[in-house]
Image (cartoon, rainbow, N blue to C red):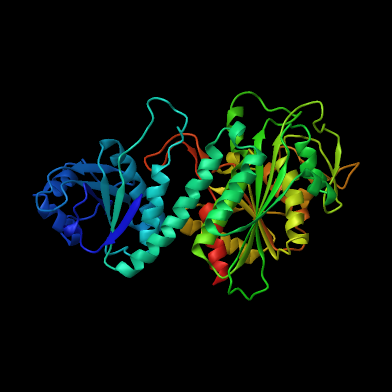
Length: 493
């Protein structure tokens, strides 16, 4: 894809100019007045006849732009002005791309309005393009969705700010789609070994350090939790570590992003039902988000030291699999009674969190995981669950998510929830049952983070779309890539 920024919309020669319009916006003033006159009153006519009202992601296609060099206009609704955010612009550009992509046109320009024209606006617009172009049907041999759009222009009054936004938007958009591509692959093509190979490749491309730990190395470190999850599979577990450090970084803070990488989750001997099990290839979405975020961080180059730790394994039922009632010893020495083998993500994360603290010297921990189905019951597909032991991290992550268009909602971690995890035979159980399932999952992880400032993001509710929307395809969303990258950049300042 090729992007350019230009200053004047009336000089644009693209096939289509996409125009963001607020609900109930007047066509008798400002830019809409100019465009209405250039289209011989067509825009006003559409509005008056209620054929276009500016509602969020509503579109109207106009072929009669005879007063402009561009021959077509695409009006895209932003919704109510009082609800506007930069995510509105992500959805604006994404909706425009997905509306146009099937029309066999090669170029599309986006108008950034004077009242919202900033570097962040350009960044959001570019991110929206990347979100829109991703399609999950990579193995389709027929009826494969494709488009001919190759060039995208951003029309902005402040070219310098737009260029900066373009650079940020490309880094974040490309990295989000990188994660989506990992998640979208069938589990046969995205084993722990394949995840490690992708990490090595991306590290080479963007200048990250990489270290891969196999099962012998993990055994030497005493990582009995991740090894316990993996022992039912023919695939070897991998602990993947990516490192970014700016050459001018002089601080003492070490950030660690930790991702759950269950490349297929059958539930183990606590077997899942057959319905929907094919989606369990998505259970490595947390690790994919961490890898994507580390890619973005390397491109954005903040003055920081950051590790990405991805705990990758398969959870399979076999004669060698862990059984309900087994006890695992973690790297921390803490023992866990496994009462449900389908609560495996927290087991691999337990060892990964301890590794990040002990071996990497992490001063701040953020883990990301498709941890619980309960978070979907709590929030639907709107919010991801957030739990933390640090108020500042909560505020920073919610703010970073808001900038990314990824909404987080904090849940409590009162000590009473820990009562559900008490075991008669070990230090704790790996499941507290159905009540407060998302919270007890987070509480379990808190115990392994210890005194280190820590936050947990449960993306099981937001990691994929069950149905395609006007601005994004069905399938993986890349949730948390941009939030994590934004958080790292913000802390570096």
